[in-house]
Image 1 (cartoon, rainbow, N blue to C red):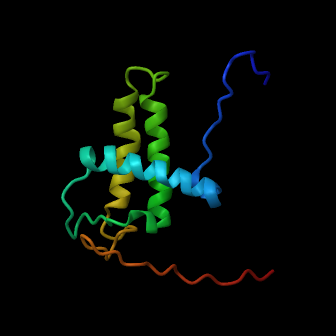
Image 2: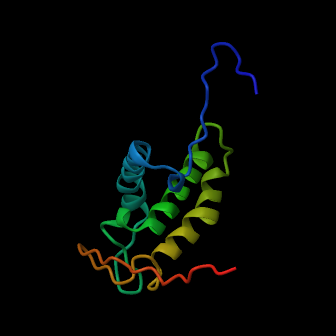
Length: 130
């Protein structure tokens, strides 16, 4: 693809799980800003044992991955180039499934309590034998 003179080069943001080092840290910082200033104030509901949330969500790789995807969809669906139904589509197709998954009692925040993070142990993986 050829870039037109004086047209800014647009970069497609890389999914956070593909990043490392400084790039990962910068992306996580932008994600935290979005989560703390938009997602939680507008869409977070009361924390209960049936709908857990971890105040240290960034320590859960699954939550980071899902929230980053959710924020990327938010940018796409609500930005200047989106159509008028973009926000409604984002709520239906992205917000509800991600929040249901994260807040599920057996989801990534299972065992976390308000103000208390509980690390999860990954299931054992057997080595591949061919």
